[in-house]
Image 1 (tube, rainbow, N blue to C red):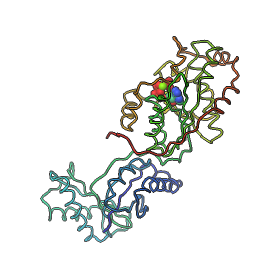
Image 2 (cartoon, rainbow, N blue to C red):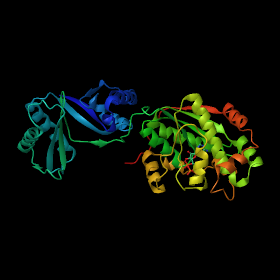
Image 3 (cartoon, rainbow, N blue to C red):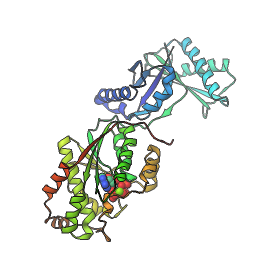
Image 4 (tube, rainbow, N blue to C red):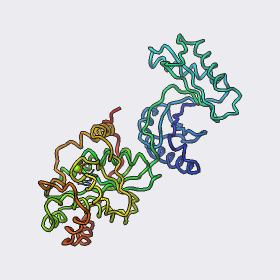
Length: 397
Ligand code: ATP
Ligand code: MG
């Protein structure tokens, strides 16, 4: 008998021919996430991934791998050979442990699954043997509809028994959908947007715009703090920190006041596009949300979308604010996001921002600007900061 941790893969298993590639990415990330804790091996057995490690480290390992995308459930298991007598012995052990853990358990149900259809007993027969072993040894009853305790038995090359299933985030392994550049502000939305796209397999770096000295250093620190929290999910992250002030001054001097925000947005997109070309980001990610503020009307989004030559992912586009806030609390960014520091966009905030900008008009307004020069010099003056993968912060269940 050996104790291992099983990882159930969600959509990864649907990937047909690509499955191996997805599984291997995921295994690589699992190993990386627990490298400092230590483990004996990470291996596949018929559709699931298993971690063999010291039992005393199981809780810590489970916490870590919860944040590896592509995993749906995590279970501490005992691994035994497939003799039905051994399985019965194993069932006694895990039932005893489950009852010690939670003495109020009154009912149970066996849930056998044969990944290997050549196993001599069918699932129902295995369940009967599980049931027999429990009923003979413990004062609890069978309830097939709503049991207090599920006793799972997976028959693969080996047999695995477990009673607990911890939920993970699902999604796809990081990097299976290329690298993406997140526009990270200090607000509530953009960290959530980054998290959601990372969950879909995008490997994320970030660009941040500030208007120093009009915006404070503390505003930038707040953004770093958010990046650090996010990095528990995304891994190490590069941040390009860009001073937008020279561009904002030029816009302020040369363009209609009500178009200030939307033209700044177009510059953010231009810079993001340029960084993407240089660093091979295949997508640009924002926390925009339809109708939330003036620059996020359908016409506003049309005008900003017209800039980049690659897809702009806006995973929050159709979400209500309450749901976005729920995510922010869940991933631990909310408390930092609501700290009151000014954002670069508030520096030259127009009194009456244009709600229905038209691309033609905006392009006309931009004519006096030396766009190329402004973009290049903003990039030439940027700071590049490396954020190291951090521990998860005050994550809520
Ligand atoms: P957030 O809460 O993410 O700041 P928001 O609701 O305040 O979003 P806006 O300020 O209109 O909305 O910004 C929309 C999106 O544009 C942000 O989610 C972010 O992706 C990007 N963005 C805005 N300001 C900045 C900035 N200073 N640096 C980097 N990206 C920014
Ligand atoms: Mg904002």
